[in-house]
Length: 417
Image (cartoon, rainbow, N blue to C red; front, side):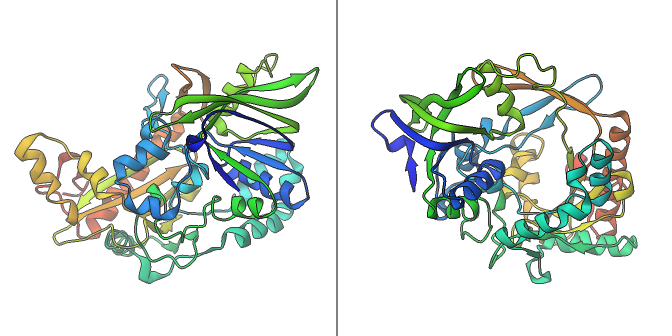
């Protein structure tokens, strides 16, 4: 059952065995497992609930306003010479899983080995393998077929071939994907197996109740035990408070993500003695390089992401073929007036190449303005060097894929032109 908070006339009160705060990849899994075990479960999500047919009618800007936290403008402020990093986080039933490209990588063995050395012996590669397999079955993780490669990805592959860089198909959590290329605004066909259509659906089938538009403001405690939560129901498009709610629970699970879990715990008076609360935030910074091809690419036709290269994996960098919503690409073009329009007219010929970095920097999360966090982050010096290397490789890939500079925006020109 889903209760759409914005449709409620006011607040509510209920009692359950387990209250889960957050409906993303963490909260949804907990809700499903506990509901299947026979416990009564309530899931509270600050964001709204939307069906696949809703995603299809939203523009990119409307999707960002409705489903992205901060309309997609949440940032980690760089400390020292670190850059500011955009943080893509969801505020919707299903959390960030609704807004990703569906890419599913297993945690590499070398990373698990490091965790074991740090004392997390239950997370060894051998012990994690059956768990990975279980999750992959739940969300249908499969290789992306060649016929779903977009024109942008085809250029990425062509350039990589000329540079003798190995390419592999990405594994994604999808079922009957038709290559709509709208992954980051919610899959309009329901093909992407995000947690709202997998784990949460199974949780609801076993009696769990999911409440959307419900902002949890405090975890209630008695002595050293959590006994429930309180908060406000948010109504209307602007999220104005509509009424208060209280959920009484034997167990409270806070799964509000790396940015909001520390804020909720701190606001509830929990973990104040811990020096780790809100500290040691880690990110995997990403980058994108744009290029203009001599002919139409129409990169929006096909899977948003379908191939990758581990050519730089030893340096902690993964290279990816990708694309983005055309309106987003157009908004990143420089200039005003006719100059800007001349660049926008080249979007059908645009290609994007991207990468992800395993950084060893650290950040922190503090209370910011309103109910949003203030996030700061300091990249490791080695990470800044490696991300520059990744950008250069991506630009060379674009050049070998026969993309050009020429009339392209300066920041989009290939390194070799």
